[in-house]
Every structure is written in structure tokens, then in C-alpha cells.
Amino acid sequence: MQATDAWLEGPARQRQPPRTRYGLEDPVHPSPVREKSVPPLVISPEDANTTDFVLRQETERPDHALFSIPSADGSWSDVSAAEFARDVRAVAKGLIAAGVEQGARVGIMSRTRYEWTLADFAIWFAGCVSVPVYETSSPSQVAWILGDSGASAAFVETGRHENVVRTAAEQEDLPLEHVWQLEGDGLDELRRAGAEVPDAELERRRKSLRLDSVATIIYTSGTTGRPKGCELTHYNFVDLSDNAAAVMGDCVHPGASTIMFLPLAHVFARFIAVLAVATGSRVGHTPDVKNLLGDLQSFSPTFLLAVPRVFEKVYNNSMLKAEDGGKGKIFHAGADTAIAYSRALDSGRVPLPLKLKHALFDKLLYSKIRHAMGGKVEYAVSGGAPLGERLGHFFRGMGVMILEGYGLTETTAPLTVNTPKLNKIGTVGAPLPGNAVKIAEDGEILGKGVCVMRGYYNREDLSGEAFVDGWFRTGDIGELDADGYLRITGRKKEIIVTAGGKNVIPALLEDQIRSHAIVSQCLVLGDQKPFISALVTIDEEALPGWLQRHELGDMSVAEAAGHPKLKAEIQEIIDQANTTVSQAEAIKEFRVVPSDFTEDSGHLTPSMKLKRAQVLKDFQAVVDDIYSGTKPAR
View 1 (cartoon, one colour):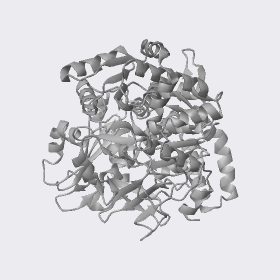
View 2 (cartoon, rainbow, N blue to C red):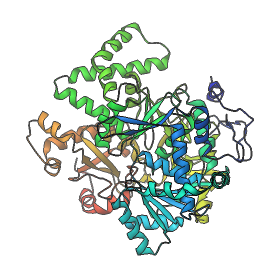
View 3 (tube, helix red, strand yellow):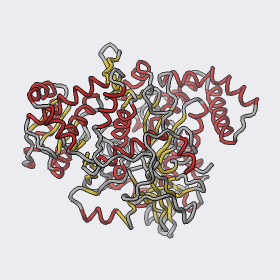
View 4 (cartoon, helix red, strand yellow):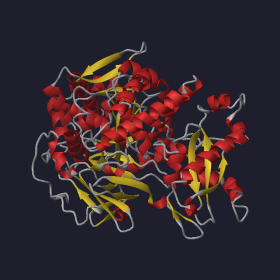
């Protein structure tokens, strides 16, 4: 069955002819590998907005738990749909009482927690626009985001965050009238202040928002230059959520639950937070990933959302634990069995001997990994970077289906996604209903549909450059297979052109190298150079076990970086990755960097993307050393 037809098997709240006003029509495919368009299954009325999701849950299942809040003793306290709706209204009335004007921009700077989403919906109920700020942002970054968006108020988590915001406001003379602390009495202050605001005034504010109203301005995390503010509308959130729910009903539904640990300032987590309210899925929050393992155990989610690095960590930590316990052979045999089992599922036939081996390893290995993830996880949604085919097959083979998707801030997260019924491992799926993908002549991925932003706030020049003939230019390189599933091969701006004129996509090598337990980060370089090289950093958590297995005693990361045994292992990892590319694209030289690339070091964005220009600038001496001769050392 072709993907377009299979979408129609999913439940839909309302099926209507495709919306043509936004540039989508019935799929017309000039070429099966150049363009894929999927008509929407759900179309919302023009006066709808994201707050309708809260009313939907309040009306249909008022006693159903929408959220769970962690307690100090490790237990969770549920918040029902009716309680959430009442709290949202109370905080929204407080915003009105405080003089926050309709249409005003309101910042949110906090770690991941229940009150983040509470503030978000309260801002919308008050007829305003939310502006997320990463809680790790510096005063200058905060000043840019709040100043550029014209925010007049902000929610912050703690006194530390308030100090950052107020410092930024004073330095740049920002018209910031109010700052409320989520951990202090800021929300109680708003609830008290709004007690006298009439219900009719709140409802007037809420209903002032329509599909074409701006819901939020999300600033890109900024791998280069100043962040740009992406204007996402209520149309983006409403129609994308309902269309996603129509084909992902097995994953997100009133009986489903997830624990949120990614930053809600990022569009990926933000969209899932809205989708959860739309579908009635229960959400818990954990702001510190150090507590994630224990929180998974106590919360027991049915689905997770994470970036590929999290799944790499789960795999690698399980492998290292097995090897340290003398059970490495069992783990590797079980991993190979899981992958073979998953591939056999794709072929439509699982041989009996493989079924028996799979059942054995389910008792010995897979059940233990699932237990570590909470015991009930059936699905995981992955985005932000390529996952890798081997890892995708491993997790499905051990009982957790990873639904890999693709999108950007500019596309409200998912432009394409694999679904429970239509999952092709190694791809990022087909377009969600209401979306379309096209491959330009130079290989760039173009997107169109319900997910695409209105434009960049206050930057008509950039907005004009971002679109061509109504299609959004993603800046990524990819290809569509015959069934309309998308594969990502790299970032257009990151393509390396060697001195010999060879085009190299660094991500193809970086993802393979980074998947190994001992490696934390990898940056492939060689633009206008005679050969390809790489900078590699070491995973600090994996290092002690590696040192013990190699009988090397205690060493710091900096000390280990120069050790011949570690260099030899990195060489083997690179040699293995080199077998997947041509000789001209292969890494000829590498250096192990004595410190990791992190957000704190300024080398990663909050969404864990490498700031290539910053890395090259800070490690220029290392790069110069690599290319000091005319030929690679090997």
C-alpha cells in the first residue's frame, strides 16, 4: 500500500477535502522521488486556537490526569484536566489584572516543569504571545530575545533566572514591566490579582485568537549569528497536532503517558507538550537528567521523546555494564538477534529459530533494558539528528519502536515522521497529513503545509530568502524513496569542499563515530584542505570503565586523550566509518581533543547541535597542526 492511502486508516476527528488556501492540494507527484504531498485528515475552523485543546479535555474527560507533578519522596501527584483548566484561567486572569495587554509578548525562562506549560497556556488564554528562553541563556542572549520580540513581561523559574532577566533589561533598557518567579510566589500573586477579573473578559481575550494569530515566537538556538525569531501560529499548533494525532493514535492517546526531560524552550518538546494536551496523554516532568533513571522507574511512561544521543547512551551504557560484568558476549549476541529480528519483521517473515533466540534474549537482556526505561515504554519519538539504522533496528527488536521524525523550529517540529503503522527504519518518515516535501535540484529539502511558520519576526528580508515558490528552504540535504519516505544526508551549509573539489557531507561520518561508547563528539573538517580530518572528544562517563578494561588505572580525560591505546581505539572506530565512504571522503587524520564540546564550553547549542565555526575558532591551533604538512601522517 502506498503511504498516501495508508494514512487514511488512522482515526480522524473530522475528514474534509484538502485545504487549498495554504498551498496544499490532492497529491500530484511529478516524480515519486522528487515530491511527496499528503492531504490533511483534520481541518479546523478559522476561529479555533490552541486553547481549545484545554477545553476539549475539560469537557470530554474532566477527571482524567493530564499531568503528574513529582514529589520529594519520589511519588507523583496527578493534575486533572479540570484542575489544569481552572489553574490556567486563574493565571491568565492574573496577567490581565497586571495590565498585560492583549497581543503582548511574554517570556518564559525555566527548566522543564509543569509550570512551564501552565504559563504557556495561560499566556494564550490571555490573548498574548509566548516567547521561550533557554534557562541556560546569558544576559546578552536574554536581552536579544526579549528585546527583539518586544516582551513586556516574563515568567522565570528561580531568583537566579530573575537576576539574569533583570540584568538584561537594565543593560538594554528593555520595557519589561513584570517578572514572576515560578518557584517563588509569582503564580500565587497572579492568581490572587486575577480573582476579580470577569470570566467574560477572559473568554473575550481567549476567543480573540484565531488560526492565523501568532502563538509564539521561538528563537533558533543559533549555530551561527544572532538567533532568528520564528513566528509560529495557532494554525501551526492546532492543525499539526490534530493531524499528527490522527496517524499516531497508538502512541498518543488518553491512556498514554510520557516524561518530559528535553527543554521546553525547544520546539520539539514544545510541540509534544501541546500534542499531549490535545490527545489527553499524561505528562510528567524532570528538569535534571541526572534523575532521569529514577524518574523513569517511578513514572513508568508509555512513550518517550529524545534526541538520538539519549538512545546511544542507553545502548552504550547497557553494553558497558554487560561487559564490565563479564556478560559482553551475551549482550552482543542479544543485540545482533534484536537487529536480525527487526529486519525479519520488515521482510514479513521471522524464521522459527530466530523467534526462539529472540524469546531467550528477551528474558536475558531486553526485559532488563525495558525495565530500566520504566517497564512500559512501547514507543519513542526521536528527532534533532539522524538515529542510525542499526540503533533503530536494535530498539524495535528489543520491544521499543523508535519513531524517527524530521523538522526544524521553522516547521513547528515535525515536517515528516514515522508512525506506528508506517515505520521505515533508516528514514525520518513521510510527510504528516497536511504537509509536503520536495527535493530541489541541488538536493535541498523543501517543505510546505500546516507546519510551516509564518516567517521570521521583524525580518522580512530573511523571510523572503527562506521561501522559493511557496516552499520553505530547510537548508538540509536529503532524498525521497519511491514510497515518499525521507532520508536526511546532511546540512547544505556544512558540506565540505576539499581542495581537490570533492564534496563531503560530514554528518555521514560524524554520526557513525559518535555512536561508539568512548566517543562524545566528533567534528569532521577539511573545507578547502587537501584531505579530510576530524576532531574527537571523549565521553567522560564511559572513560573509567574503558580504562579499567584496558588496565590503565585512573586518568583524567586530558591524560587519556594522549594515550596510545585510546588513540588506537579511536583509529579503529574511524577506520570502520571510512569503509562507508569513498577514499576521497575518508578521514585521513584525527586529533583527540582533551576537553569535551559542551553547551557550557560554548561549542553546543541548547539543542545539542555543534557550533562548527566556534569549535574551529577555539581549536585553530589543533587544526593547523593537522594540516602543517602537505600529506597526512598515515
